[in-house]
Length: 472
Image 1 (spheres, helix red, strand yellow):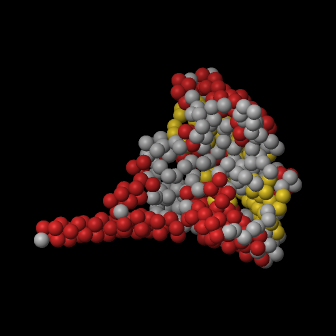
Image 2 (spheres, rainbow, N blue to C red):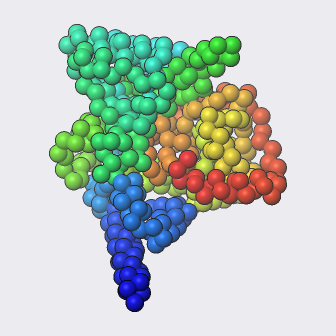
Image 3 (cartoon, one colour):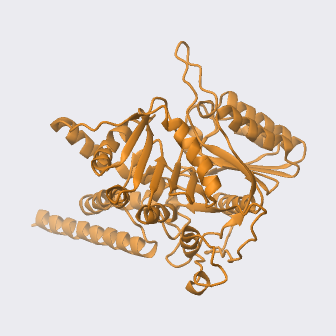
């Protein structure tokens, strides 16, 4: 009888834990619009039912991917979007504004870095010529020739009296040899770790990484793109008898009001990382900027847990459905969700030229395995996939001749749904063509992907890896 009573109470306690876990899951998902891959949702539900005592604390630590309540972003009102005084507002800029992102702003002196040496020189020039402040955000800094050069210059400029702030991801900082952050702090550089595994676990941020790459000098000069501050992204790495060539990456710098928007984004991230009190919603007033003499405008596209919508994902999917002539994308990792893959394949079936540029072998073996299912489907629909011989780490999406997204986000589910990412949207056909020429130059060395039906074992392996694609 006692055993039966204990058993019945055990079932009752387990049932209560299951109900509590499911209620918390449902409430958080609804309140914060926690869009998830179906495999991730199924995994959480099974875990909360089978082992609620461990799954619920784990969910509270790493389960949330949004920290902005639905409707809290300062989206542009419909009346403003339909304002006849804004006839030249790009359709993509309208969509971005409707999701609460800053309006397009003018810029000048755009320089697209043709290789790592040029990108590094532009970065070091920014640091050397800054007069008042230097703000740097990156996922990773290496303890190598590049990382040490940046650290040394930041420390020297701080000792010279400049306000220098460095924000590094709390997980990315441990990749490879950790940079000498104490040396920076002792020189007067303000250093903060974003998404620290120890400092922010209770806030649910351990699994959410700041993948943004951004450098601002004096609030008006911006350096941006896909490069982390380590040797492989600029000059290659010497490893005994097997030197590793520099990865092919894409970065740029520019000046003007668009750079000031980048400064504002850095300031928001800094306040969040340092846990300073900030309003629950950040209002970005809609104030279209007058164009420069060249009429060049761009738009900061922040994506991640600090945005109500999946801003970057929505822009890319919308662009695929609206494309009429050409879609060109370059990314090191291609692990799209079903909707993005469908948008690309339908575009190809409509006769749009869809070109996807990837490395033949990336630095993430699991991502390479997971991509084949999508690549076979895309090529079967008429899309073309190009494999570069060396590691290409660039991130770009170009649609027709009037829309380019350049920055830090990969075309995988982690970048599009979990990470803090930063892209810049460009709308001028001449600028879009410059980025298109950069991609075409590197595509010229690539070979066409040839799909092959997988064997039974490989098909099983691909399925298992795809099941965890949301975390790759």
